Length: 116
Length: 109
Image 1 (spheres, rainbow over the protein chains, first blue to last red):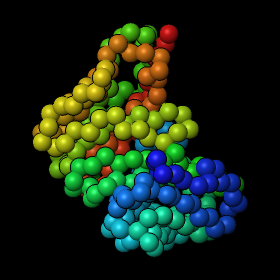
Image 2: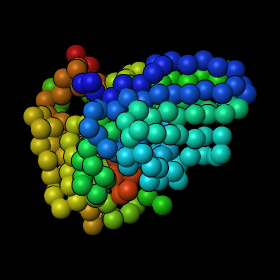
Image 3: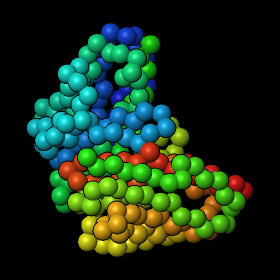
Image 4: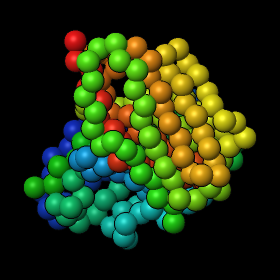
């Protein structure tokens, strides 16, 4: 596709439920990133994939959060037992190469998650 | 731990003014620094990327500078227009992007 796409664009769920957020990166981009943005803040890094493997998952806040990228393209961020504090915009980005190659990251429009 | 601070938090200017947004970071071991624009309810659009070996980048009415040793960057916007109204985010790249909280810019017509 022309850019990074994310689905759904909005998700409302109840506390304790399980949610999955999907990211389709730009075709051919090997690096994929997930960020979380709370109101009035900049995005916070969650996890970075290089190909199929998670190269850095140091930003995941706890073990309720998990992400996969089984074929090195589409990625899914999974949140178990959601809490109201998980409410935020979840952003996905992709780039052609690893961060060391100083390539810009292209961001999707985000998924707005609201946990009631 | 890298920390990024942006000043001011919000800025309102009349159309046509030149303006400067500031960004500072605590760890100078970065690959690059990027400035992004974010419109309400939208994702981020990359404006300028300055590699760690560079001192500035220009694109149209935008000019960004980088002083790694002092941990500072500025984004200069010339002849501001109402369409420039948005949130501007600075981010530094080590192995991951670390963002500031942003500057909310409003350009009044």
